[in-house]
Image (cartoon, rainbow, N blue to C red; front, side, top):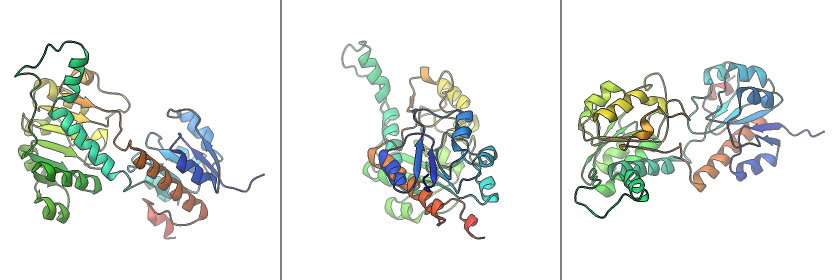
Length: 326
Protein backbone atom coordinates (compact mmCIF):
# COMPACT_ATOMS: atom_id res chain seq x y z
CA UNK A 1 0.00 0.00 0.00
CA UNK A 2 1.39 3.44 -0.99
CA UNK A 3 2.30 5.96 1.66
CA UNK A 4 1.81 8.82 -0.79
CA UNK A 5 -0.85 11.38 0.14
CA UNK A 6 -4.15 10.99 -1.68
CA UNK A 7 -5.33 13.93 -3.75
CA UNK A 8 -8.70 14.41 -5.39
CA UNK A 9 -9.13 16.79 -8.35
CA UNK A 10 -12.76 17.72 -8.89
CA UNK A 11 -12.47 18.19 -12.67
CA UNK A 12 -9.79 17.64 -15.28
CA UNK A 13 -7.35 20.53 -15.48
CA UNK A 14 -4.38 20.97 -17.86
CA UNK A 15 -2.10 17.94 -17.75
CA UNK A 16 0.90 19.82 -16.37
CA UNK A 17 -0.82 20.29 -13.01
CA UNK A 18 -1.89 16.67 -12.76
CA UNK A 19 1.59 15.43 -13.65
CA UNK A 20 3.16 17.65 -11.01
CA UNK A 21 0.84 16.27 -8.34
CA UNK A 22 1.54 12.69 -9.43
CA UNK A 23 5.23 13.13 -8.67
CA UNK A 24 4.41 13.07 -4.96
CA UNK A 25 0.80 11.93 -4.63
CA UNK A 26 -1.79 9.35 -5.56
CA UNK A 27 -4.09 11.41 -7.74
CA UNK A 28 -7.71 10.72 -8.63
CA UNK A 29 -9.45 13.02 -11.11
CA UNK A 30 -13.13 13.37 -11.88
CA UNK A 31 -13.28 11.42 -15.19
CA UNK A 32 -16.21 13.41 -16.56
CA UNK A 33 -15.91 16.90 -18.01
CA UNK A 34 -18.68 18.32 -15.84
CA UNK A 35 -19.33 19.67 -12.38
CA UNK A 36 -19.74 16.95 -9.78
CA UNK A 37 -23.08 16.54 -8.08
CA UNK A 38 -23.06 17.28 -4.37
CA UNK A 39 -23.29 13.59 -3.58
CA UNK A 40 -20.37 12.77 -5.90
CA UNK A 41 -18.22 15.52 -4.43
CA UNK A 42 -18.74 14.29 -0.88
CA UNK A 43 -18.14 10.66 -1.79
CA UNK A 44 -14.90 11.37 -3.64
CA UNK A 45 -13.25 13.64 -1.09
CA UNK A 46 -14.01 11.41 1.90
CA UNK A 47 -10.52 9.88 2.06
CA UNK A 48 -8.56 12.69 0.41
CA UNK A 49 -5.52 14.21 2.07
CA UNK A 50 -5.83 17.20 -0.23
CA UNK A 51 -8.41 18.58 -2.65
CA UNK A 52 -7.89 20.61 -5.80
CA UNK A 53 -11.27 22.19 -6.43
CA UNK A 54 -12.86 24.59 -8.90
CA UNK A 55 -14.94 27.73 -8.62
CA UNK A 56 -17.98 25.61 -9.46
CA UNK A 57 -17.53 23.47 -6.31
CA UNK A 58 -19.22 24.64 -3.12
CA UNK A 59 -16.75 24.01 -0.30
CA UNK A 60 -18.41 24.48 3.08
CA UNK A 61 -18.76 22.99 6.55
CA UNK A 62 -20.36 19.82 5.18
CA UNK A 63 -17.35 19.29 2.92
CA UNK A 64 -14.91 19.90 5.78
CA UNK A 65 -16.84 17.46 7.95
CA UNK A 66 -16.55 14.84 5.21
CA UNK A 67 -12.93 15.37 4.17
CA UNK A 68 -11.63 14.98 7.71
CA UNK A 69 -8.15 13.94 6.51
CA UNK A 70 -7.68 16.90 4.19
CA UNK A 71 -4.72 19.16 4.86
CA UNK A 72 -5.90 21.85 2.48
CA UNK A 73 -7.99 22.98 -0.46
CA UNK A 74 -6.36 24.51 -3.54
CA UNK A 75 -8.86 26.46 -5.64
CA UNK A 76 -8.26 26.52 -9.39
CA UNK A 77 -9.33 30.16 -9.70
CA UNK A 78 -8.42 33.65 -8.59
CA UNK A 79 -11.74 34.09 -6.84
CA UNK A 80 -12.68 31.90 -3.90
CA UNK A 81 -16.21 32.94 -2.99
CA UNK A 82 -17.17 29.29 -3.54
CA UNK A 83 -15.28 28.40 -0.35
CA UNK A 84 -16.32 29.19 3.21
CA UNK A 85 -12.89 30.56 4.09
CA UNK A 86 -14.01 31.68 7.53
CA UNK A 87 -15.07 28.15 8.40
CA UNK A 88 -11.86 26.72 6.95
CA UNK A 89 -9.83 29.14 9.04
CA UNK A 90 -11.75 28.22 12.16
CA UNK A 91 -10.79 24.60 11.55
CA UNK A 92 -7.16 25.42 10.73
CA UNK A 93 -7.49 24.36 7.09
CA UNK A 94 -5.47 26.36 4.53
CA UNK A 95 -7.13 27.53 1.32
CA UNK A 96 -5.31 28.86 -1.75
CA UNK A 97 -6.13 30.49 -5.06
CA UNK A 98 -4.27 31.20 -8.32
CA UNK A 99 -3.58 34.95 -8.54
CA UNK A 100 -1.39 36.68 -11.10
CA UNK A 101 -1.32 34.07 -13.86
CA UNK A 102 -4.53 35.13 -15.59
CA UNK A 103 -4.28 38.90 -15.21
CA UNK A 104 -3.49 39.75 -18.82
CA UNK A 105 -5.74 37.06 -20.28
CA UNK A 106 -8.73 38.45 -18.38
CA UNK A 107 -7.84 42.05 -19.23
CA UNK A 108 -7.53 41.08 -22.88
CA UNK A 109 -10.95 39.44 -22.87
CA UNK A 110 -12.45 42.56 -21.31
CA UNK A 111 -11.13 44.47 -24.32
CA UNK A 112 -12.38 41.81 -26.72
CA UNK A 113 -15.84 42.15 -25.18
CA UNK A 114 -15.65 45.94 -25.25
CA UNK A 115 -14.84 45.98 -28.95
CA UNK A 116 -17.39 43.28 -29.73
CA UNK A 117 -20.30 45.15 -28.19
CA UNK A 118 -19.22 48.64 -29.26
CA UNK A 119 -18.72 47.65 -32.90
CA UNK A 120 -21.59 45.13 -32.93
CA UNK A 121 -19.28 42.33 -34.06
CA UNK A 122 -21.36 39.39 -32.87
CA UNK A 123 -24.64 40.88 -34.05
CA UNK A 124 -23.33 41.67 -37.54
CA UNK A 125 -21.56 38.32 -37.81
CA UNK A 126 -24.85 36.51 -37.13
CA UNK A 127 -26.62 38.72 -39.68
CA UNK A 128 -24.11 37.88 -42.39
CA UNK A 129 -24.18 34.16 -41.64
CA UNK A 130 -27.98 34.17 -41.82
CA UNK A 131 -27.85 35.11 -45.50
CA UNK A 132 -29.80 38.33 -44.93
CA UNK A 133 -27.05 40.75 -45.95
CA UNK A 134 -27.71 42.39 -49.29
CA UNK A 135 -24.58 44.56 -49.43
CA UNK A 136 -23.05 47.60 -47.79
CA UNK A 137 -25.32 50.34 -46.49
CA UNK A 138 -24.55 53.64 -44.71
CA UNK A 139 -26.84 52.94 -41.74
CA UNK A 140 -25.95 49.32 -41.11
CA UNK A 141 -24.70 48.25 -37.69
CA UNK A 142 -23.56 51.65 -36.49
CA UNK A 143 -21.78 51.30 -33.16
CA UNK A 144 -19.82 53.31 -30.67
CA UNK A 145 -16.47 55.07 -31.13
CA UNK A 146 -13.61 54.07 -28.83
CA UNK A 147 -10.76 56.45 -29.68
CA UNK A 148 -10.67 59.36 -27.21
CA UNK A 149 -13.66 58.17 -25.17
CA UNK A 150 -13.83 57.84 -21.38
CA UNK A 151 -13.14 54.46 -19.84
CA UNK A 152 -14.42 53.89 -16.31
CA UNK A 153 -12.78 51.06 -14.38
CA UNK A 154 -14.54 49.81 -11.27
CA UNK A 155 -11.94 48.06 -9.12
CA UNK A 156 -8.26 48.51 -9.92
CA UNK A 157 -6.56 45.44 -8.59
CA UNK A 158 -4.23 43.48 -10.86
CA UNK A 159 -6.78 42.86 -13.60
CA UNK A 160 -8.46 46.26 -13.49
CA UNK A 161 -5.06 47.97 -13.66
CA UNK A 162 -3.94 45.81 -16.60
CA UNK A 163 -7.19 46.49 -18.43
CA UNK A 164 -6.92 50.25 -17.92
CA UNK A 165 -3.28 50.39 -19.01
CA UNK A 166 -4.19 48.85 -22.36
CA UNK A 167 -6.42 51.86 -23.09
CA UNK A 168 -3.36 53.99 -23.89
CA UNK A 169 -3.38 52.74 -27.46
CA UNK A 170 -6.75 54.40 -27.97
CA UNK A 171 -6.00 57.72 -26.24
CA UNK A 172 -8.84 57.20 -23.81
CA UNK A 173 -9.48 59.26 -20.75
CA UNK A 174 -9.42 56.89 -17.75
CA UNK A 175 -11.36 57.34 -14.54
CA UNK A 176 -11.52 54.72 -11.82
CA UNK A 177 -13.40 53.92 -8.66
CA UNK A 178 -11.65 52.07 -5.85
CA UNK A 179 -11.08 52.23 -2.10
CA UNK A 180 -7.51 53.45 -2.66
CA UNK A 181 -5.48 55.53 -5.09
CA UNK A 182 -3.74 53.75 -7.96
CA UNK A 183 -0.42 55.56 -8.56
CA UNK A 184 0.43 53.29 -11.51
CA UNK A 185 -2.65 54.28 -13.46
CA UNK A 186 -2.34 57.92 -12.51
CA UNK A 187 1.28 58.06 -13.67
CA UNK A 188 1.07 55.93 -16.81
CA UNK A 189 -2.25 56.98 -18.29
CA UNK A 190 -3.27 60.08 -16.37
CA UNK A 191 -6.13 58.26 -14.69
CA UNK A 192 -8.26 60.08 -12.15
CA UNK A 193 -9.86 58.48 -9.12
CA UNK A 194 -13.50 59.52 -8.83
CA UNK A 195 -16.51 58.46 -6.83
CA UNK A 196 -18.55 55.55 -8.11
CA UNK A 197 -21.45 57.93 -8.75
CA UNK A 198 -19.32 60.26 -10.85
CA UNK A 199 -17.85 57.36 -12.81
CA UNK A 200 -21.33 56.17 -13.71
CA UNK A 201 -22.28 59.58 -15.07
CA UNK A 202 -19.20 60.32 -17.21
CA UNK A 203 -17.89 56.98 -18.54
CA UNK A 204 -18.60 55.88 -22.09
CA UNK A 205 -17.38 52.38 -21.24
CA UNK A 206 -17.46 50.79 -17.79
CA UNK A 207 -15.39 47.68 -17.07
CA UNK A 208 -16.01 45.83 -13.80
CA UNK A 209 -13.10 44.24 -11.90
CA UNK A 210 -14.26 43.88 -8.29
CA UNK A 211 -14.36 40.79 -6.07
CA UNK A 212 -17.74 39.44 -5.00
CA UNK A 213 -18.62 40.48 -1.44
CA UNK A 214 -21.61 41.93 0.35
CA UNK A 215 -20.73 45.47 -0.76
CA UNK A 216 -20.44 44.53 -4.45
CA UNK A 217 -23.43 42.17 -4.71
CA UNK A 218 -25.82 43.78 -7.22
CA UNK A 219 -23.57 46.84 -7.34
CA UNK A 220 -24.97 47.36 -10.82
CA UNK A 221 -28.74 47.52 -10.71
CA UNK A 222 -31.61 49.52 -12.13
CA UNK A 223 -30.63 52.58 -10.11
CA UNK A 224 -27.04 52.53 -11.35
CA UNK A 225 -28.10 51.87 -14.94
CA UNK A 226 -30.26 55.01 -14.79
CA UNK A 227 -27.20 57.02 -13.76
CA UNK A 228 -25.13 55.84 -16.73
CA UNK A 229 -25.13 57.53 -20.11
CA UNK A 230 -27.71 56.11 -22.49
CA UNK A 231 -24.82 55.73 -24.94
CA UNK A 232 -22.65 53.82 -22.43
CA UNK A 233 -21.53 50.20 -22.58
CA UNK A 234 -20.96 47.86 -19.62
CA UNK A 235 -18.37 45.04 -19.54
CA UNK A 236 -18.14 42.43 -16.78
CA UNK A 237 -15.36 39.85 -16.40
CA UNK A 238 -15.39 39.79 -12.58
CA UNK A 239 -18.25 37.92 -10.89
CA UNK A 240 -21.80 37.44 -12.12
CA UNK A 241 -23.74 38.53 -9.02
CA UNK A 242 -22.11 41.97 -9.17
CA UNK A 243 -24.86 42.70 -11.71
CA UNK A 244 -28.56 42.31 -11.01
CA UNK A 245 -29.13 40.38 -14.21
CA UNK A 246 -32.91 40.80 -14.50
CA UNK A 247 -32.48 44.54 -14.09
CA UNK A 248 -29.75 44.53 -16.73
CA UNK A 249 -32.19 42.79 -19.08
CA UNK A 250 -34.76 45.52 -18.47
CA UNK A 251 -32.18 48.29 -18.89
CA UNK A 252 -31.09 46.87 -22.25
CA UNK A 253 -34.67 46.38 -23.41
CA UNK A 254 -35.58 49.94 -22.43
CA UNK A 255 -32.43 51.51 -23.83
CA UNK A 256 -31.20 52.86 -20.51
CA UNK A 257 -27.69 51.91 -21.69
CA UNK A 258 -26.42 51.15 -25.19
CA UNK A 259 -25.14 47.67 -24.54
CA UNK A 260 -23.38 45.17 -22.32
CA UNK A 261 -20.85 42.38 -22.72
CA UNK A 262 -20.49 39.80 -19.95
CA UNK A 263 -18.47 36.66 -19.32
CA UNK A 264 -19.92 35.74 -15.91
CA UNK A 265 -23.47 35.24 -14.69
CA UNK A 266 -25.57 35.67 -11.59
CA UNK A 267 -26.84 32.08 -11.62
CA UNK A 268 -24.08 30.47 -13.65
CA UNK A 269 -24.34 28.49 -15.86
CA UNK A 270 -27.90 29.75 -16.35
CA UNK A 271 -28.56 32.94 -18.26
CA UNK A 272 -31.48 35.15 -17.30
CA UNK A 273 -34.21 34.30 -19.85
CA UNK A 274 -34.51 36.99 -22.48
CA UNK A 275 -30.89 38.12 -22.54
CA UNK A 276 -30.09 35.62 -25.29
CA UNK A 277 -32.64 37.29 -27.57
CA UNK A 278 -31.13 40.76 -27.37
CA UNK A 279 -28.80 42.16 -30.00
CA UNK A 280 -27.25 44.71 -27.65
CA UNK A 281 -25.49 42.21 -25.42
CA UNK A 282 -22.52 39.91 -26.01
CA UNK A 283 -22.31 36.81 -23.81
CA UNK A 284 -19.36 34.43 -23.48
CA UNK A 285 -19.23 31.28 -21.29
CA UNK A 286 -16.74 32.31 -18.56
CA UNK A 287 -13.69 32.19 -20.85
CA UNK A 288 -11.63 35.06 -19.40
CA UNK A 289 -8.72 32.81 -18.42
CA UNK A 290 -9.09 30.49 -21.41
CA UNK A 291 -5.68 30.74 -23.02
CA UNK A 292 -3.15 27.91 -23.16
CA UNK A 293 -0.62 29.71 -20.99
CA UNK A 294 -3.06 31.01 -18.40
CA UNK A 295 -4.90 27.75 -17.83
CA UNK A 296 -1.64 25.75 -17.68
CA UNK A 297 -0.08 28.20 -15.24
CA UNK A 298 -3.23 28.08 -13.11
CA UNK A 299 -2.93 24.28 -12.96
CA UNK A 300 0.72 24.45 -11.95
CA UNK A 301 0.07 27.12 -9.33
CA UNK A 302 -2.84 25.18 -7.80
CA UNK A 303 -0.73 22.00 -7.75
CA UNK A 304 2.21 23.74 -6.07
CA UNK A 305 -0.07 25.23 -3.46
CA UNK A 306 -1.60 21.86 -2.67
CA UNK A 307 1.77 20.13 -2.50
CA UNK A 308 2.97 22.74 -0.01
CA UNK A 309 -0.09 22.11 2.15
CA UNK A 310 0.49 18.36 2.06
CA UNK A 311 4.12 18.84 3.14
CA UNK A 312 3.03 21.01 6.03
CA UNK A 313 4.57 24.07 4.39
CA UNK A 314 3.10 27.52 3.88
CA UNK A 315 1.14 27.53 0.62
CA UNK A 316 2.47 30.39 -1.57
CA UNK A 317 -1.00 31.70 -2.40
CA UNK A 318 -2.80 30.98 0.85
CA UNK A 319 -5.83 33.25 1.30
CA UNK A 320 -6.12 32.56 5.03
CA UNK A 321 -2.48 32.71 6.23
CA UNK A 322 -3.62 33.06 9.82
CA UNK A 323 -3.97 29.27 9.92
CA UNK A 324 -0.18 29.12 10.07
CA UNK A 325 0.11 31.43 13.06
CA UNK A 326 -0.67 28.84 15.73
